[in-house]
Image 1 (cartoon, one colour):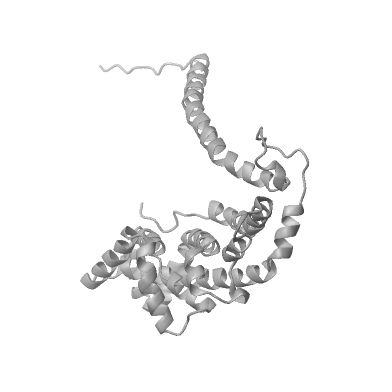
Image 2: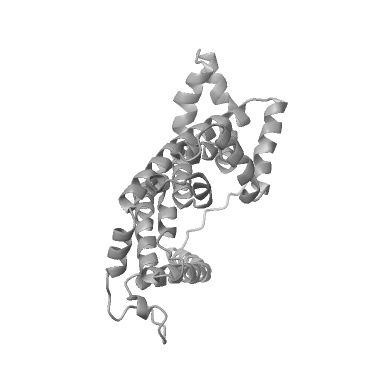
Length: 296
């Protein structure tokens, strides 16, 4: 004769304290991390806040003691002087052309390169990938001279195309797409090949759509890189009508003295397009399914 244990009744009162204790334990662990993040945000945000608020101060109040965060007599004279003394409308048009074309080409070329490096087995592709990564180990200043000679010999000196061309292939973009495509199951590609899909069709109709989060992320980064680029346009351009925003801000700096109110106003003006681009596209990156196509 066998005996069976009768199930014990679970007291509902004993479950509630357990769940409450877990909730409290999770809250205690989250407080230090959240506090640290707020401290870091304050450390990074305070200089930016001081920078923006100082642009509304008169030139004589910027370095007057005691230093204050908020302006006593806010004014937009620095913004007006910066806009009147520099051709910001022309600078914005030139920079927008460079950023948009360079970003489109960068995303497209990086996507193609990353897919080839991830899904095609060839030793020369591995050597090529190592060569791309090796460029990240060199300071950008080291490659300025050979890049300048190549672009000059191509007849692209003093043109916007000379700024765009060297920015097309980036090691960061290739690495991002390669790492993403490595996580896509090979069975997905094989199934498409069995169904009769060609290689170009597989890439355009399967791989490109699932890599949309990476494309948007790289697009934001590339637009920011090209917008803030200063050294390369300074070397390539000598026509004021083709200057970009960063060179235009440098033109606000006088030879003998610097009107910091004007320089700060022009710098804040140059930040506005970047902030708009980030605010518009960040929700697409945040809401996109970045794990699409990943292995289980």
